[in-house]
Image 1: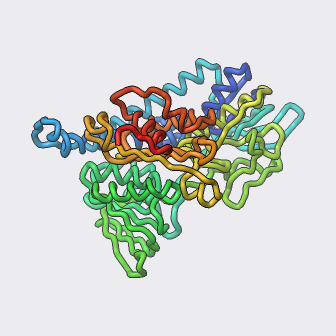
Image 2: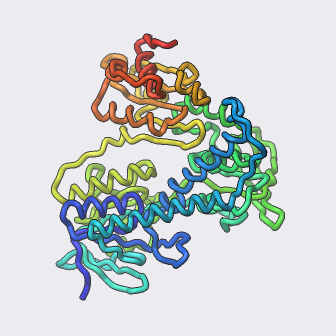
Image 3: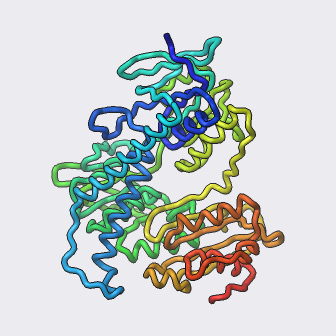
Length: 478
């Protein structure tokens, strides 16, 4: 007898598993289908999606390990600490990362049991719709067709590859292979100066790789406020990352000796990059193939995304929703999570809301980069009159004590109303500091509100307050 559910979630990543948990909390009978085993030794489907298994979580674990190595190797002497020769066991570093991933995937399995969510192990695809709901085939070890009144598509995305550059995740890798090198490459090439390219490039640079990044676009970190981007490029170059903008990738050859990348630089001159390994990091594409969307009357757009209603994430098929990387908007795990909660609550008859302008972005380099809201360039283009306040970490006692004084905070506020329009940070713990700005913008706060709130001293958060004060030209410590 076919299993029947109130809500079926296709995909167990951040958008999917959070949607399943919230739906179960609301009293629905819920199932979640997942087929990707990633690196599970038993070949069992693993929950957590790209983010937990081969993305956000493992990359942050490696970033933390590499930061510790660089700190001990180059910076603790400034604190009066003398150490002997420092060695890195890359195998142990990778094993630590894997252990964290395994612990967290087990944690999601526990949450599924706690919330009585049925895990369907296998690839899910639509078969059609009947009187009782949608029929969805689960193509796993135990092949079955289940019925669901509501379906949430949360199948995430995969790395985009370039034509003519075969990714084997040994010599030429995408994000997955770049997280599990079995040794430290002497020379590492990275195609793409985006979030993943910069983060992985930073990991391997810190532990000894000579890293060269090739980027097709002429502008570094074009999505960032350009004041932040220029500061970042200056700092990363000083750290040792070789960043080449405006290049055109030509033939790429790989053999036992390594990889050769032929490219044309920004001046049109032919160049050659010889490296031991190459990471291709040129964006991601939605996982929308083989879902059987045509069987329920749905189509994807020209970029492979599923069209949805902007307010409820509903597709054109009644009772079918889509969230996360398979729909418009930033490919961010926390955006997918919020959409998963929104859909579950919408199905329950509630009226949730997401302000996409208040979704923060983070790049986990060192220093970190984080922002929320509009950039100066966007405000100028829109013709919005604004005032800007900026304050450096170099004038902050806590940052100096931590020996992490690079960067600054910039606050942008409406010239007439003082409402905060955007906050941009490059500096220590930017991923945490940006949360204050996101909360402030959700509540339509003014720069004056942050300026009047008492912040703890000494703390990094004082830089946010000083930047807010600076919008009115009254920063106190500079």
